Length: 437
Image 1: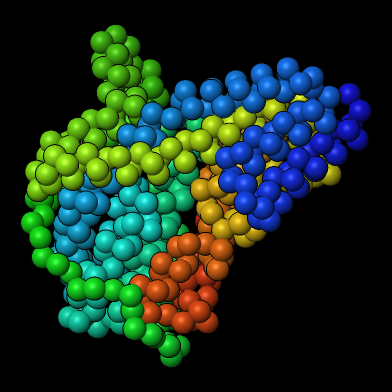
Image 2 (image 1 turned 90 degrees about the vertical axis):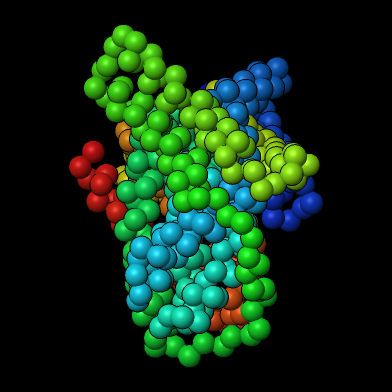
């Protein structure tokens, strides 16, 4: 196979993908399929081979994570609607104590955003930040952005949030290891981001417009145990399966762990807890409407994730991935930089962290056998890279600034720079960990 042909097919295909996403009305899902077809045909695959690679890549990717994404989004929607997310926030603030409200809200956001989309979680919890600001030493903006920080970090790094879940599926990473690794990475990232934010708010005058916010409307909330259980239990079951595999358990205990710790079953258990334990304050109609709305969101993510699998499979089938990996190794570029850099560029270009990490993982995964890079490090590099400089093309930038009353200028200082600090800290941590793997 002509090496120049392989390189050109890759460059043309990825360039076309960016143009389609950024400059046309074509959605990300068909854009990924079109790019896959172009790379396959230009690299020398026959039309039938190209279509086969697209289909098998799509199916194989969703076979692992499609159901989990659907269940996870449904679970998150019930947590959001039932008041469980607000109850978790109340609990964190209560036990954190006075003077630590910014940390309480940051880690509330971190937990809530594991199953709940960060945009939704922020809108739900920001009235609580406003009410806490009236009774604490912290300005409302500091508390609001602290909440946004926790939400965005786990949204980018911890399954079953759809983005990192898709990355884990594409790289075929054990879900328990991905969850544990994402949590351990997220904690120091959140700490650095909140420290920077607290320092900034004390030393810079803030221009605040009227926040787009309403006071909290009191409504019945579930008890604390039921509020936390749908998140804690599935994660615990998945991690137990990972521990069981590491200990090489056998017999009936292994069978039990393999079943209840499978992400599909674990997340389903969490979903059933929300349906029978948290939806008591909702009518049957409200519950069904809630689930239907969640599935419309899940459908888009599932299609994008599957299309990302198609792209990766075409790159692999054509031999393009192996060639590019060998070329990059020959010019001594550290392998860990590649997924991080690709995700960063795509994030900055089009704004969506989920699209950035899934696209980056799809491009890099066919190169993995030749890069000698730990899959977890590669996956988290995609996730961390997608946190880079949230600004005008990121919908979450506008949610955060409008609901906190920040001007665009202060939004960049308080939000865009803060996310970039998280991006940098996360990558430094990955570099250090990678030295010992």
